[in-house]
Length: 109
Image 1 (cartoon, rainbow, N blue to C red):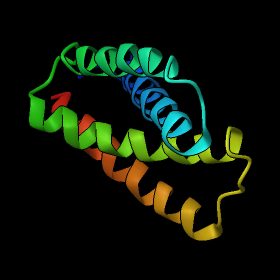
Image 2: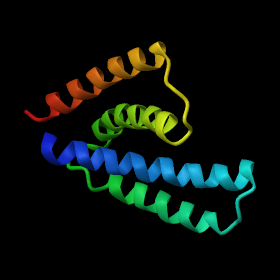
Image 3: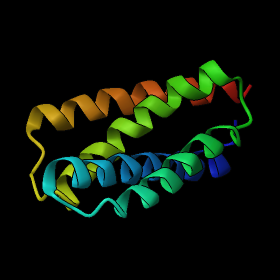
Image 4: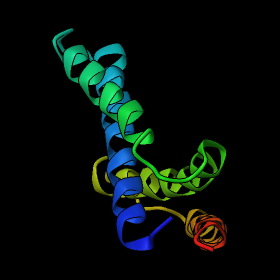
């Protein structure tokens, strides 16, 4: 995996997944119109397609992506939900980011 293309692709994949799930949440729990489900389907389909664009083996991609997803989800918590992450959230994200970086670095050889 190449850092220059992999990290932006991971971030785009995470945003597609989070947006798709968030749109379903808006419909199911916050009374949004069922029309938002069209956006959810498009976003989640884009997420699945983006996962296929990663150059490494699928298991390694999913493992590294999980770390990027966790970091992105906490950013979403802060930016969209307007909830400040705790010290424990930040420590957990730091540990996960290090693990994700190790996976990506190890597969670059």
